[in-house]
Image 1: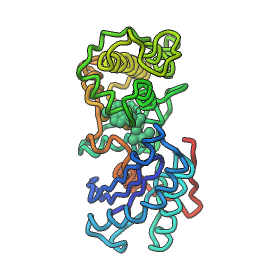
Image 2 (image 1 turned 45 degrees about the horizontal axis):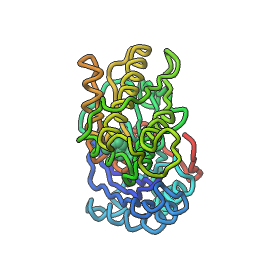
Image 3 (image 1 turned 30 degrees about the vertical axis):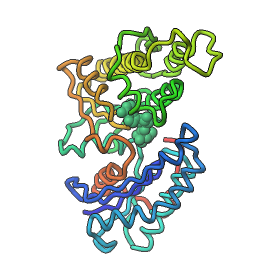
Length: 335
Ligand code: KG4
Ligand code: ZN
Protein backbone atom coordinates (compact mmCIF):
# COMPACT_ATOMS: atom_id res chain seq x y z
CA UNK A 1 0.00 0.00 0.00
CA UNK A 2 1.24 3.48 -0.88
CA UNK A 3 -0.51 6.60 0.35
CA UNK A 4 0.00 10.23 -0.61
CA UNK A 5 -0.62 12.25 2.57
CA UNK A 6 -1.29 15.98 2.88
CA UNK A 7 -0.95 18.20 5.96
CA UNK A 8 -2.10 21.85 6.05
CA UNK A 9 -3.65 22.26 9.51
CA UNK A 10 -1.54 25.21 10.60
CA UNK A 11 1.65 26.77 9.23
CA UNK A 12 3.49 23.90 7.56
CA UNK A 13 2.56 22.89 4.01
CA UNK A 14 3.49 19.21 3.88
CA UNK A 15 3.11 16.15 1.66
CA UNK A 16 4.57 12.67 2.03
CA UNK A 17 4.36 9.24 0.48
CA UNK A 18 4.22 6.45 3.04
CA UNK A 19 4.10 2.73 2.25
CA UNK A 20 3.18 -0.24 4.45
CA UNK A 21 5.73 -0.88 7.17
CA UNK A 22 5.33 2.02 7.72
CA UNK A 23 8.11 3.24 5.48
CA UNK A 24 8.43 6.93 4.64
CA UNK A 25 9.28 7.12 0.91
CA UNK A 26 9.27 10.92 0.85
CA UNK A 27 8.56 13.65 3.34
CA UNK A 28 8.39 17.27 2.20
CA UNK A 29 7.68 20.15 4.59
CA UNK A 30 7.50 23.76 3.48
CA UNK A 31 7.65 25.80 6.67
CA UNK A 32 5.92 29.19 6.66
CA UNK A 33 7.87 30.41 9.72
CA UNK A 34 9.53 33.28 7.82
CA UNK A 35 6.12 34.56 6.66
CA UNK A 36 4.65 34.64 10.18
CA UNK A 37 7.81 35.72 12.03
CA UNK A 38 7.24 39.51 11.70
CA UNK A 39 3.90 39.10 13.52
CA UNK A 40 5.25 36.89 16.33
CA UNK A 41 2.67 34.17 15.68
CA UNK A 42 0.66 32.40 13.00
CA UNK A 43 -1.63 34.73 10.99
CA UNK A 44 -4.47 32.49 9.72
CA UNK A 45 -5.07 34.39 6.47
CA UNK A 46 -1.36 34.33 5.56
CA UNK A 47 -1.28 30.60 6.36
CA UNK A 48 -4.19 29.78 3.99
CA UNK A 49 -2.76 31.86 1.16
CA UNK A 50 0.67 30.34 1.56
CA UNK A 51 -0.77 26.77 1.55
CA UNK A 52 -2.54 27.65 -1.71
CA UNK A 53 0.70 28.88 -3.26
CA UNK A 54 2.89 26.00 -2.09
CA UNK A 55 0.79 22.85 -1.89
CA UNK A 56 0.85 21.76 -5.54
CA UNK A 57 4.66 22.05 -5.71
CA UNK A 58 5.06 20.27 -2.37
CA UNK A 59 2.89 17.36 -3.61
CA UNK A 60 4.79 17.14 -6.91
CA UNK A 61 8.04 17.12 -4.94
CA UNK A 62 6.80 14.33 -2.66
CA UNK A 63 5.84 12.13 -5.64
CA UNK A 64 9.13 12.88 -7.39
CA UNK A 65 11.27 12.09 -4.32
CA UNK A 66 9.39 8.80 -3.88
CA UNK A 67 9.96 8.13 -7.60
CA UNK A 68 6.26 7.41 -8.11
CA UNK A 69 3.43 8.54 -10.37
CA UNK A 70 -0.22 8.85 -9.28
CA UNK A 71 -0.87 5.43 -10.89
CA UNK A 72 1.36 3.84 -8.21
CA UNK A 73 -0.77 5.16 -5.33
CA UNK A 74 -3.46 3.29 -3.36
CA UNK A 75 -5.07 6.26 -1.58
CA UNK A 76 -4.91 9.98 -0.84
CA UNK A 77 -5.01 11.04 2.82
CA UNK A 78 -5.47 14.46 4.38
CA UNK A 79 -5.48 15.94 7.88
CA UNK A 80 -9.04 17.33 7.99
CA UNK A 81 -9.27 18.27 11.71
CA UNK A 82 -8.52 20.06 13.98
CA UNK A 83 -6.78 23.22 12.81
CA UNK A 84 -7.20 26.65 11.26
CA UNK A 85 -10.28 26.40 9.08
CA UNK A 86 -8.92 28.30 6.07
CA UNK A 87 -5.68 26.32 6.17
CA UNK A 88 -7.53 22.98 6.48
CA UNK A 89 -9.79 23.84 3.55
CA UNK A 90 -6.81 24.10 1.19
CA UNK A 91 -5.57 20.61 2.07
CA UNK A 92 -9.01 19.00 2.14
CA UNK A 93 -10.13 20.50 -1.17
CA UNK A 94 -6.87 19.52 -2.86
CA UNK A 95 -7.03 15.96 -1.50
CA UNK A 96 -10.65 15.57 -2.66
CA UNK A 97 -9.80 16.84 -6.14
CA UNK A 98 -6.84 14.45 -6.45
CA UNK A 99 -8.74 11.45 -5.09
CA UNK A 100 -11.54 12.14 -7.58
CA UNK A 101 -9.23 12.78 -10.54
CA UNK A 102 -7.03 9.74 -9.83
CA UNK A 103 -9.97 7.55 -8.80
CA UNK A 104 -8.45 6.70 -5.41
CA UNK A 105 -9.96 6.27 -1.93
CA UNK A 106 -9.85 9.38 0.27
CA UNK A 107 -8.87 9.10 3.93
CA UNK A 108 -9.60 11.83 6.50
CA UNK A 109 -7.07 11.84 9.33
CA UNK A 110 -7.32 13.43 12.79
CA UNK A 111 -4.20 15.57 13.21
CA UNK A 112 -3.78 14.78 16.92
CA UNK A 113 -4.11 11.02 16.42
CA UNK A 114 -1.42 11.41 13.75
CA UNK A 115 0.89 13.17 16.24
CA UNK A 116 0.72 10.03 18.42
CA UNK A 117 1.16 7.79 15.37
CA UNK A 118 4.50 9.56 14.73
CA UNK A 119 5.98 7.59 17.65
CA UNK A 120 5.43 4.40 15.62
CA UNK A 121 7.63 5.78 12.84
CA UNK A 122 10.60 4.88 15.06
CA UNK A 123 9.90 1.31 13.93
CA UNK A 124 8.69 -0.06 17.25
CA UNK A 125 5.21 -1.61 17.57
CA UNK A 126 3.62 -0.53 20.85
CA UNK A 127 1.06 -2.70 22.62
CA UNK A 128 -2.33 -1.31 23.62
CA UNK A 129 -3.50 0.01 25.97
CA UNK A 130 -1.32 3.08 26.48
CA UNK A 131 -1.53 6.65 27.63
CA UNK A 132 -1.33 9.05 24.65
CA UNK A 133 -0.01 12.53 25.41
CA UNK A 134 -0.08 15.26 22.73
CA UNK A 135 1.92 18.41 23.52
CA UNK A 136 1.94 20.83 20.62
CA UNK A 137 1.42 24.49 19.76
CA UNK A 138 -2.35 24.09 19.71
CA UNK A 139 -3.00 21.19 22.11
CA UNK A 140 -2.10 19.62 25.42
CA UNK A 141 -4.19 16.48 25.77
CA UNK A 142 -4.06 13.09 27.44
CA UNK A 143 -5.95 10.08 26.09
CA UNK A 144 -6.42 6.49 27.05
CA UNK A 145 -5.85 4.44 23.88
CA UNK A 146 -7.29 0.91 24.12
CA UNK A 147 -7.06 -0.07 20.48
CA UNK A 148 -7.56 1.12 16.91
CA UNK A 149 -10.23 3.83 17.06
CA UNK A 150 -10.80 3.20 20.78
CA UNK A 151 -9.63 6.41 22.38
CA UNK A 152 -10.97 8.15 25.47
CA UNK A 153 -10.02 11.75 26.30
CA UNK A 154 -8.80 12.09 29.88
CA UNK A 155 -7.91 15.75 30.19
CA UNK A 156 -6.42 18.77 28.48
CA UNK A 157 -5.48 22.38 28.85
CA UNK A 158 -8.02 24.91 30.01
CA UNK A 159 -6.11 27.82 28.49
CA UNK A 160 -2.73 27.86 26.72
CA UNK A 161 -1.26 24.77 25.10
CA UNK A 162 2.26 23.87 26.26
CA UNK A 163 3.91 24.87 22.97
CA UNK A 164 1.95 28.12 23.04
CA UNK A 165 3.34 28.81 26.55
CA UNK A 166 6.88 28.29 25.20
CA UNK A 167 6.12 30.70 22.34
CA UNK A 168 4.66 33.35 24.66
CA UNK A 169 7.52 33.10 27.16
CA UNK A 170 10.00 33.62 24.31
CA UNK A 171 7.93 36.59 23.08
CA UNK A 172 7.94 38.22 26.55
CA UNK A 173 11.74 37.99 26.64
CA UNK A 174 12.06 39.09 22.99
CA UNK A 175 13.90 35.89 22.08
CA UNK A 176 12.19 35.29 18.72
CA UNK A 177 9.67 32.98 17.07
CA UNK A 178 8.80 30.12 17.30
CA UNK A 179 9.76 30.09 20.95
CA UNK A 180 10.11 26.39 21.75
CA UNK A 181 13.52 25.67 20.23
CA UNK A 182 14.91 29.06 21.36
CA UNK A 183 13.75 28.62 24.97
CA UNK A 184 15.23 25.11 25.01
CA UNK A 185 18.59 26.36 23.71
CA UNK A 186 18.69 29.38 26.04
CA UNK A 187 17.82 27.17 29.03
CA UNK A 188 20.86 24.94 28.43
CA UNK A 189 23.10 27.63 29.98
CA UNK A 190 20.72 28.40 32.87
CA UNK A 191 20.00 27.15 36.41
CA UNK A 192 16.55 25.48 36.62
CA UNK A 193 16.32 26.29 40.35
CA UNK A 194 17.24 29.98 40.02
CA UNK A 195 13.74 31.50 39.65
CA UNK A 196 10.73 30.50 41.75
CA UNK A 197 7.74 29.87 39.45
CA UNK A 198 4.29 28.36 40.13
CA UNK A 199 3.30 24.77 39.30
CA UNK A 200 -0.45 24.86 38.57
CA UNK A 201 -1.91 21.43 39.31
CA UNK A 202 -5.63 22.35 39.69
CA UNK A 203 -7.71 19.87 41.79
CA UNK A 204 -6.10 16.89 43.52
CA UNK A 205 -7.18 14.35 40.88
CA UNK A 206 -7.46 16.74 37.96
CA UNK A 207 -5.97 15.65 34.66
CA UNK A 208 -6.45 19.13 33.18
CA UNK A 209 -3.67 21.63 32.61
CA UNK A 210 -3.37 25.40 32.94
CA UNK A 211 -0.29 27.23 31.67
CA UNK A 212 -1.57 30.81 31.67
CA UNK A 213 -0.44 31.43 35.27
CA UNK A 214 3.19 30.54 34.65
CA UNK A 215 3.22 32.66 31.51
CA UNK A 216 2.09 35.69 33.59
CA UNK A 217 4.61 34.81 36.32
CA UNK A 218 7.41 34.86 33.73
CA UNK A 219 6.15 38.24 32.48
CA UNK A 220 6.37 39.74 36.02
CA UNK A 221 9.80 38.22 36.69
CA UNK A 222 11.06 39.75 33.43
CA UNK A 223 9.42 43.18 33.45
CA UNK A 224 9.12 43.74 37.20
CA UNK A 225 6.05 43.64 39.44
CA UNK A 226 4.15 46.50 37.82
CA UNK A 227 5.07 45.23 34.34
CA UNK A 228 4.65 48.70 32.90
CA UNK A 229 7.84 48.58 30.90
CA UNK A 230 8.14 46.77 27.62
CA UNK A 231 11.77 46.12 28.54
CA UNK A 232 13.59 43.96 31.00
CA UNK A 233 13.42 45.21 34.62
CA UNK A 234 16.81 46.07 36.20
CA UNK A 235 16.54 43.20 38.70
CA UNK A 236 15.21 40.62 36.19
CA UNK A 237 16.86 37.20 36.12
CA UNK A 238 19.05 36.25 33.17
CA UNK A 239 17.16 34.83 30.16
CA UNK A 240 19.11 31.59 30.66
CA UNK A 241 17.94 31.17 34.28
CA UNK A 242 14.37 32.22 33.50
CA UNK A 243 14.08 29.79 30.56
CA UNK A 244 15.61 26.94 32.57
CA UNK A 245 13.28 27.64 35.52
CA UNK A 246 10.24 27.86 33.20
CA UNK A 247 11.10 24.51 31.66
CA UNK A 248 11.63 22.90 35.08
CA UNK A 249 8.22 24.16 36.23
CA UNK A 250 6.23 22.98 33.20
CA UNK A 251 8.06 19.63 33.08
CA UNK A 252 7.21 19.12 36.79
CA UNK A 253 3.54 19.75 35.96
CA UNK A 254 3.56 17.45 32.93
CA UNK A 255 5.25 14.65 34.90
CA UNK A 256 2.74 14.98 37.75
CA UNK A 257 -0.24 14.87 35.34
CA UNK A 258 1.19 11.77 33.62
CA UNK A 259 1.74 10.18 37.06
CA UNK A 260 -1.89 10.88 38.00
CA UNK A 261 -3.31 9.57 34.72
CA UNK A 262 -1.12 6.46 34.92
CA UNK A 263 -2.29 5.76 38.45
CA UNK A 264 -5.97 6.37 37.65
CA UNK A 265 -5.93 4.32 34.45
CA UNK A 266 -3.25 1.80 35.43
CA UNK A 267 -1.25 2.58 32.29
CA UNK A 268 2.53 2.82 32.42
CA UNK A 269 3.31 2.91 28.72
CA UNK A 270 3.19 6.52 27.61
CA UNK A 271 3.26 7.49 23.92
CA UNK A 272 4.04 11.17 23.37
CA UNK A 273 3.80 13.37 20.28
CA UNK A 274 3.59 16.97 19.08
CA UNK A 275 6.08 19.79 18.53
CA UNK A 276 7.14 20.09 22.18
CA UNK A 277 8.46 16.50 22.15
CA UNK A 278 11.30 17.86 19.97
CA UNK A 279 12.69 19.21 23.26
CA UNK A 280 15.61 17.00 24.41
CA UNK A 281 15.58 18.43 27.94
CA UNK A 282 11.91 17.41 28.17
CA UNK A 283 12.66 13.85 27.03
CA UNK A 284 15.39 13.43 29.64
CA UNK A 285 13.48 15.42 32.25
CA UNK A 286 10.37 13.25 32.01
CA UNK A 287 12.42 10.05 32.13
CA UNK A 288 14.23 11.32 35.27
CA UNK A 289 11.04 12.50 36.96
CA UNK A 290 8.94 9.40 36.20
CA UNK A 291 11.58 6.75 36.79
CA UNK A 292 12.00 3.18 35.55
CA UNK A 293 8.35 2.05 36.04
CA UNK A 294 7.36 4.03 32.96
CA UNK A 295 7.98 3.21 29.31
CA UNK A 296 8.13 6.51 27.44
CA UNK A 297 7.88 6.41 23.64
CA UNK A 298 8.79 9.50 21.62
CA UNK A 299 8.65 10.09 17.85
CA UNK A 300 11.89 10.37 15.86
CA UNK A 301 12.87 14.07 16.17
CA UNK A 302 12.04 14.95 12.54
CA UNK A 303 8.46 13.75 13.00
CA UNK A 304 7.73 15.75 16.16
CA UNK A 305 6.58 19.02 14.57
CA UNK A 306 3.86 19.07 11.89
CA UNK A 307 4.59 16.79 8.93
CA UNK A 308 2.67 14.65 6.45
CA UNK A 309 4.53 11.37 7.13
CA UNK A 310 2.59 10.98 10.38
CA UNK A 311 -0.67 11.62 8.47
CA UNK A 312 0.27 8.87 5.98
CA UNK A 313 1.22 6.44 8.76
CA UNK A 314 -2.12 7.01 10.48
CA UNK A 315 -3.97 6.66 7.14
CA UNK A 316 -2.35 3.25 6.50
CA UNK A 317 -3.98 1.91 9.67
CA UNK A 318 -7.33 3.50 8.76
CA UNK A 319 -7.21 2.05 5.24
CA UNK A 320 -6.46 -1.41 6.66
CA UNK A 321 -9.70 -1.34 8.65
CA UNK A 322 -11.77 0.26 5.87
CA UNK A 323 -12.05 3.66 7.51
CA UNK A 324 -12.34 5.56 4.23
CA UNK A 325 -14.09 8.90 3.61
CA UNK A 326 -16.02 10.13 0.59
CA UNK A 327 -16.07 13.45 -1.24
CA UNK A 328 -18.36 14.86 1.48
CA UNK A 329 -15.36 14.98 3.85
CA UNK A 330 -15.39 18.30 5.70
CA UNK A 331 -12.61 20.41 7.13
CA UNK A 332 -13.28 20.88 10.83
CA UNK A 333 -11.62 23.44 13.10
CA UNK A 334 -12.49 21.66 16.37
CA UNK A 335 -11.24 18.19 17.41
O1 KG4 B 1 3.08 20.03 16.58
P1 KG4 B 1 3.39 21.39 16.12
O2 KG4 B 1 4.36 21.55 14.95
O3 KG4 B 1 2.12 22.19 15.69
C1 KG4 B 1 0.86 22.04 16.27
O4 KG4 B 1 0.15 21.05 15.96
O5 KG4 B 1 0.55 22.92 17.10
O6 KG4 B 1 3.94 22.18 17.37
C2 KG4 B 1 4.47 23.46 17.30
C3 KG4 B 1 4.84 23.90 18.70
C4 KG4 B 1 5.26 25.36 18.79
O7 KG4 B 1 4.57 25.96 19.86
C5 KG4 B 1 6.75 25.27 19.07
O8 KG4 B 1 7.26 26.35 19.85
C6 KG4 B 1 6.85 23.95 19.84
O9 KG4 B 1 5.94 23.11 19.19
N1 KG4 B 1 8.20 23.40 19.80
C7 KG4 B 1 8.96 23.23 20.90
C8 KG4 B 1 10.22 22.78 20.44
N2 KG4 B 1 10.17 22.68 19.07
C9 KG4 B 1 8.91 23.07 18.70
N3 KG4 B 1 8.69 23.44 22.20
C10 KG4 B 1 9.68 23.19 23.08
N4 KG4 B 1 10.92 22.77 22.72
C11 KG4 B 1 11.24 22.55 21.43
N5 KG4 B 1 12.46 22.15 21.08
ZN1 ZN C 1 0.48 19.51 15.10
